[in-house]
Length: 80
Picture 1 (tube, rainbow, N blue to C red):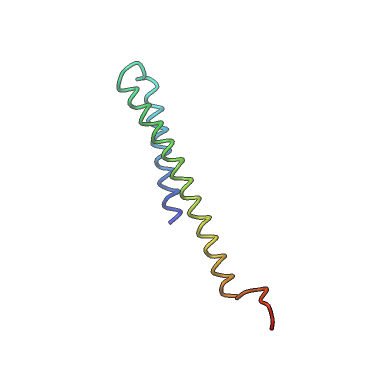
Picture 2 (cartoon, rainbow, N blue to C red):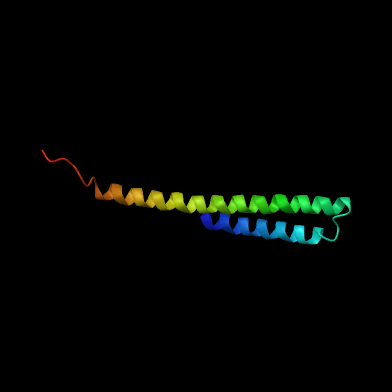
């Protein structure tokens, strides 16, 4: 699941970068401003999606760690 979010984030970031690149020549026109705005939104959305993908990976690692420790049982159980 995390790989899908990372891949989509990279695609969104690169598409936003391409939109900003193509808007440089058109900036004096309204269409250039729209391209630049949409590109900036795409880049920031891509970075957020990448961060969410990395967060998913960390949460999965934490879940696996906790499940592994639960299977072993409590380490410092008091003996009676």
